[in-house]
Image (cartoon, rainbow, N blue to C red; front, side, top):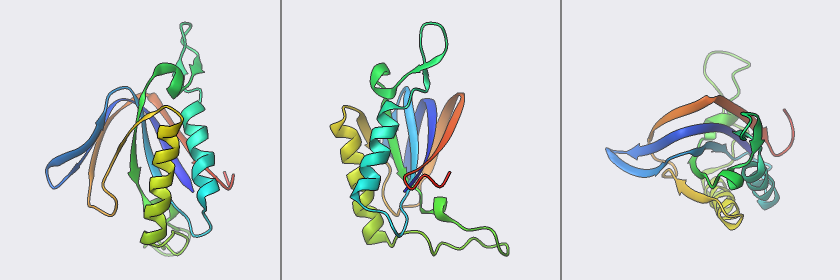
Length: 149
């Protein structure tokens, strides 16, 4: 499972002109599910996201977590995180999980994040979404449950 985590001042996701999720200060999490992913991957990443120290303390150092700041998370499914662009000009997605598996693990991740005390908003799975955000910092991190990077 892969995630792009962005520290944001605010973020929202819209589907067909309707806002389906929005947050103020917190994290936008673009989440991709891979073929080999299981519940343990979702739990690992939820724990990581909840406790990543990417928010500034009183001295301006990144020492506070999403939980410390009482920030929210906007989680958006993003199968393209498993896009393979090494050959040709069109990405291949053979390493992405099929939709029925990805949907379940996306929901497991969101539930695990909420269980840890994070307020979670979501995009709409498999919908064409428009995501707006104000990246704070900017701070953008890549996470992988298999620790491939």
